[in-house]
Length: 142
Image 1: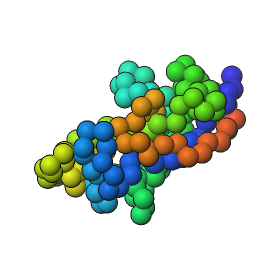
Image 2: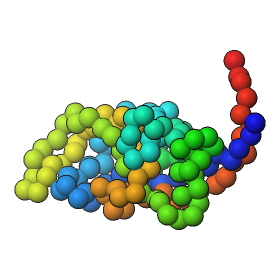
Image 3: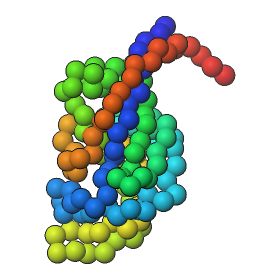
């Protein structure tokens, strides 16, 4: 059986911009983060839709490339991305170092746990910037 996987690229976080809760992620906060990581639907741990293939900090933020699988919720999520109905990205994390600010926190060092495709990202600029369909062969590899 084969289907259409979808590869997406975008920013899971943008540095120096406050999110809706007042937190600001600083450059270097994701130092040490590595792929692969789970790609979840709306931060739901029981709804994985793929995986993060690569991630890197650049001058703007945390840029990711991820693959949405062609089965189950992944198929639905891919269709929504292709239709332009959903393009938000977000991330799950544990705080390793932060300092308080008047309106939130400066997030200085984070443990990245997952990235999610979301309807309403906490950080408005955390978005899918592009996508590409890929043919996959669903089979058993050992």
